Amino acid sequence: MTTDNDAELMEAGRKMFAGEWQFFWASPSIETLPPMHGVEVAFAGRSNVGKSSLINALTGRSTLARTSHTPGRTQELIFFEGPPSPDGDKETALRLVDMPGYGYASAPKAKIASWTSLIHKFLQGRANLARVYVLIDSRHGFKDVDMQVLTTLDKSAVSYQVVLTKCDQVKKSELEQTLLETAETLRKHPAAFPDLLVTSSRTGEGMGELRAAMVRLLRERTG
Image (cartoon, rainbow, N blue to C red; front, side, top):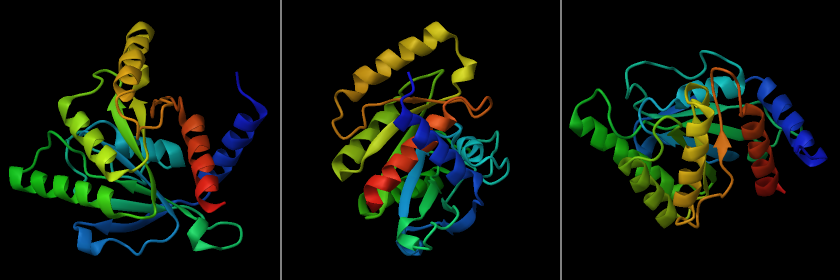
């Protein structure tokens, strides 16, 4: 059941993401991060989980974030900026951060280790990082490498929320089972936001709820 407040948040999210979103910055190392302005939300997940596709679906721009069938193509922290707030205050603007995929990638082990280090350092030291959305493939559920990232987030005291991707590619009964197992796992991680988001970048399912969650978060952070 959708409440009036939910409907208002979803409409605010639709308007925010209907604005102009663009590439802002790429950071191959922790030393090259952009200055901390506004509120940042980051997307983490295994290689090929669909981070770039999700960002494109959120913003309604099919080529904003680069997608590839080859895991590991995103090799830097990629920042995207949305439209300025109505009052022009940079501190109330939202940024999206596309993180390098962890786990398997078609790259040398030393390079993968470098990306992994970058991810962990970013999570531990970014004061304006409001939330990390941990993307989990609906077809597979949690893997060991995902659990390692949850542990890092727990230690970093970073708020995070799990987003199931590619929900259109699994049967309803299998998706329900994955939801139950995911919720059970998250009960052991108190830093995790309890509500699960279920999405499909192909069909657009769940995008309204994800946008609404970001509007709520932005309002909480900026008062």
